[in-house]
Image 1 (tube, rainbow, N blue to C red):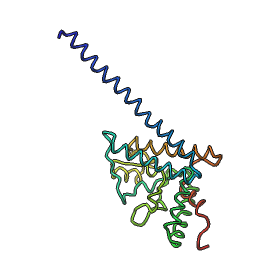
Image 2: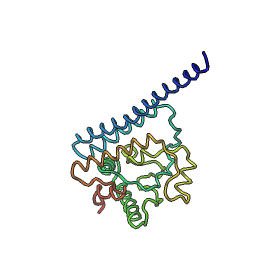
Image 3: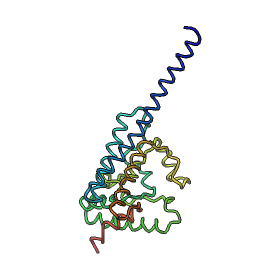
Image 4: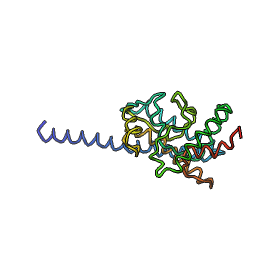
Length: 232
């Protein structure tokens, strides 16, 4: 081949691959379009916001698992049981989630455990109310067990499911160090996006039902759901 033939071959080869990459990029975004549509259908047909929260979490969990199993070059995640640094960050919950957690607590906690939890929730909610910037608070989650494991793990909030980290030391530096904005921990972008889509879908489902649709601080939201103390 002459030099021009070689040049044309190289240019065309790159152009062909570039077209494929653009096509794949568009198809990648369609994953999230389809996910939003799936949330809208399933959450819209749910007979309550509790059922909607259950469905939304199930769909998001399935999507996140499939991403990790089938998508190449997924980031390494250092999160493990009893690694509870992120359980000291400020958490809000979308509609339906607090009720889902409350039902789990009623079914699985003893009367004594519920009473002790209520005290922790009241203290945490008060701290959030009185904080100049609640998002900068660093306080142990009332739902975190003495073993540093989540006591409501199967029904934990979407934001807790969304959080991932590739470095335990970085989490401890950000959470317990001077970086009060909570930033600086590299996330698995697709994983995080999936659960934010679930959160937005629950807000939309509540709005479509004509009920409050904003996220609420976790402790305050749970106190609204669990009602008076069993020992009152």
